[in-house]
Image 1 (cartoon, rainbow, N blue to C red):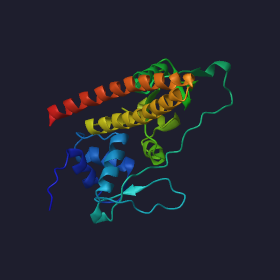
Image 2 (cartoon, one colour):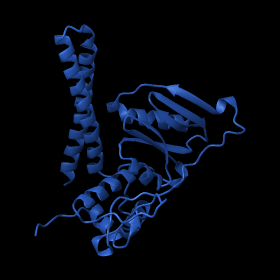
Image 3 (cartoon, helix red, strand yellow):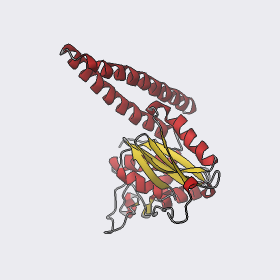
Image 4 (tube, rainbow, N blue to C red):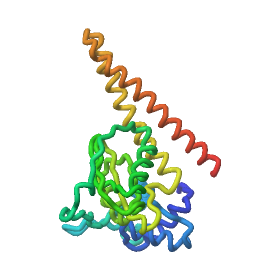
Length: 265
């Protein structure tokens, strides 16, 4: 039988899954079992549960009709993976709002600058403008108390993931091209989507894969059309060059994290 070394996080996740649990329950019990030493962010836990499911160590329990919550447990407890819960998305009242309580900003950002974009969204929240809705090249903000919300964004096309993160008390406030945006009240405590190196590296790998596919598509279209005499396709070639630059940036960030992880192993 193959010997598999467990990380501390995986060990506590499996302990928490001795009895059926949903995502937020796993996060709370892991922190309790470790004496507060291990804190699992939603994105990190979601990836870990999916990985354990693929290995056959856990499996998903049947979900009741109409329920948004999925429970997980270890094989001994007739186990299952990924979880999500039904934290209802809070809607802002429309009545009584003045003209200055909401504004929309049209903005373009590059995928490899996602950290800078997230920082800007949190700076807006610190100034009293909470992200209410995110769409293609468009952000809608609503007035709030300065610093009332923490904003997080991630590239993750899995629809179940939204419910999983909402279980922690966060709100899904929109998305664009596989990017999802969440906000959560600062009074609930720190809010991060990743709590370890592996999940951060996996996120960069997802971004890199997406950039690579788009870059390759633009390159092929550009070359084929240029050979066909359609000079306007120079735009596709320029896009592929820009995306290749972005891919290099993502690869650099990923390599840096991998080196840092190796130092701690």
